[in-house]
Image (tube, rainbow, N blue to C red; front, side, top):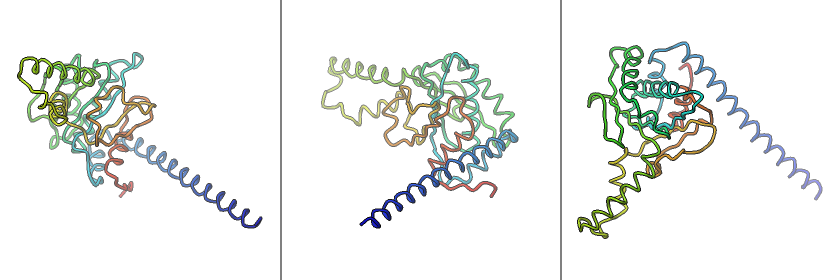
Amino acid sequence: MTFTANASRAILVLLHWIVYLHDTYLSVKWLVISWILGTAYSLNEDSELVRADASKLRKKPRHLSVILQYTNTSGVEALIEDTVNVVCWSIAAGLNRLTVYERTGILKEDCDLLQKILNNRLQSYMSAEFCTEVKLYVPHTGRSIGPESGFLVSLISEEDGKETIVDLTKSFCEMSAKDQLNDQDITVEMVDSHLQKLVVPEPDLLIVTGKDSYLYGYPPWQLRVCEIYFTNKSSPLDYVSFLKGCINYSGANITLGR
């Protein structure tokens, strides 16, 4: 009996150490990969590295969304820099569209400046063969800047979440009071359709910056089947976190150097 108990205890201890070593291996692996990628990217400022990394993904998110953080310490300049970087990476990776969420809405206050910085950066970042312009779109006001054929970047904030639901509810009530809409016509599908049109379609992948696993008021109806990746790091959003999010979405096993 004692032998059996000791054997069971030994097996449990062995299993514990196997799990511990496996987790440690994965952690060290990601640290090494992060260091290699960070070093490689810092030495390669053009878009070729991003395009090469993206080519190894089994699938890519057509629509990427990111939650960026604004702080008084870093200022709006850092927020714009984060936005410009993720736009460049998204275009180089061959994604179709990007939605940038910043809770306060300060990013939407000077779209003309953001558009100018984006176009200037893209001209130097992308090769002539792949260079494209950007179309900025603010769903809450309906304002857009840039060519229709440009890479679509939507800017949303907290007001596009709860406030949009409140505004839509008021609109339905007013239409119902004027006999323009029957109560029976208000369905989940109808509400969902209106919300999608008022804000943006649901993204395939959402990358969340910040140390906490928190969504900062992001529109909840946009997250039903969306893959969410938390960087668990403070701003800024770096390329390694961008790539990790895409790898998680893809489910691909990427071997560096091949």
